[in-house]
Length: 391
Picture 1 (cartoon, rainbow, N blue to C red):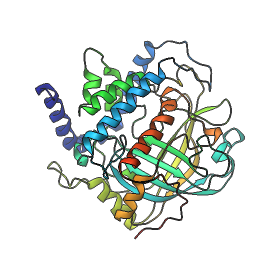
Picture 2: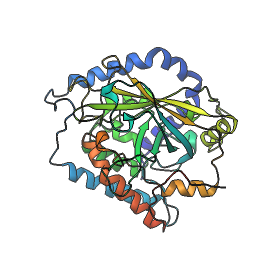
Picture 3: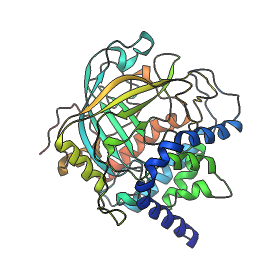
């Protein structure tokens, strides 16, 4: 049950979302990066320098306990929010659209970047899912201002780290430059408060405060308008071949409309989907995929994902172009197909093995939650080929 204080916090957040588009672009241009680096500096001040070497992990004895809590809370949330046959994802819940794409590896990459999927100059078919964070399906303007992209690349040869799919390589990223929680230990607490419809209390709870993480997220959360206009960041690290760690990101190359209808009054509930559809009805959109390499094991940690991997320390390097062609995507059949897909970063080549405690948790968590959703809907898992066609 929400207290009056909880309701006041929710009201303030929702009011801010309607004003945000009028002031945020200027504030971001002037203050976002300086403040991001300032907050990041204060986080580094209190961190231990006892970190794993470059490209290596350190396993924690309580990881399974945290993961058990996260999975249990997420399942309870699904059971509260949805009815059998209508279950959605526990995270990245609301599908704005699942669209066709093509990932093209850039020519002439230097040898140290030509690992895994980037080892060959070729194009891959892909499904691209744009979504909100969840765990609830809400009108877009009531969201926390946090978007995600899930990229399922197909026709990828070679053995994968999960054997439930054989020809896919998945990438996931969000619109914040650091992850919402630093570790799985803290993520378990976030799931507790998310199930109670007040994730903001995870950050502001005086008994276990995460104020600096809140500030970092607030600097990058904003009222979103069009998924094709956003930058997306992996926030967690992956291998780029043996002994070399990276994070990756997607940066828009196409100018698209970011108009939100009817502001400052309440916009349509699905205006983000409407803007995505309008853009792709008119033409294609493109993103540049970039990687940032780990150069400093303390300033670019593997096991703490609330820390910025600063591009001033290691620049973002273009490695591929994601092209989303002109298309229609709003048939019920295509949305049903999106619900059957499992996007899991462990659907990957060994050269892109996920690193760190939150990525280790994702392997079992994403698998169990997808199978739970599919079972409650009477559906089965499907590995796409790219040949799927919808009305």
